[in-house]
Length: 309
Image (cartoon, rainbow, N blue to C red; front, side, top):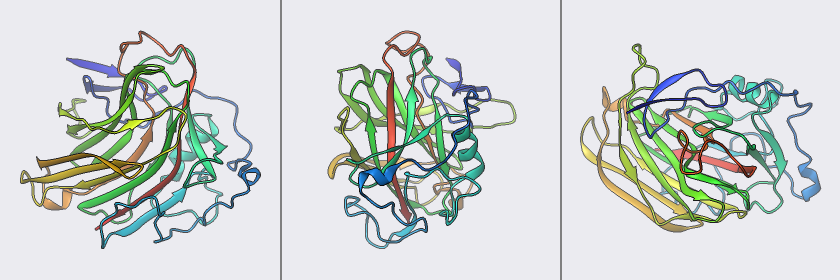
């Protein structure tokens, strides 16, 4: 059936249940934050340079040979229009809008293996299922058929799952990979997985094509502990050709290797990553936990490295 979903006051979107697409959210207004920089100096670690670097983090170990870095950013600073030496590709107006309205905060992350600080997205008590905070968007300066993404992520020790929680979205012109953490309650395992959704998010008639099903994995997030999530997206060599492949690792351990996917596109040029959206949508609709969050929790993103060829 169809479901209408909201992302912290997002513009309405009619979506195919149980999958939510990623409309650009309009968070509830909160008190503006004075500075985009957290006191990460107290961790004793220096932030990585703001300029893009081709030296990928050592723990992002499964990047294939020959890939070129698109971004290599720690999240210890929010990107505002006034931020110097920003890396290209990050959509600054959106990020500044969400940051100044309290949709995310910047916090120290002394135990993150990749970054001295992190973007923290919060799930307050009363947050309804199918909603959640927005963080940052990245549109690669060069679109590539093969894309590698490595991120350090952490769910809080008390995080309350609601069946399916979204980490974010990897979009291409013809659809989206919806990144998931599946599990209900505060103790059940949080298993990593994906939905593949074919169809543009903003069609003129408001409709969206249904998803094609999920991809499960053996990967499990540990609450309260940082993990290094790696993903490799190999799009089809042409529209409808069944040679697409998706792989994933957590802390270096493989847990997803899905092959034989035929991704739709108007042309071969459309078979390339267009955008990475860092959202934290809690569940879908009411979910197995009922209406709303009962235990406040957080999701943190410490470092984002993207490359391709």
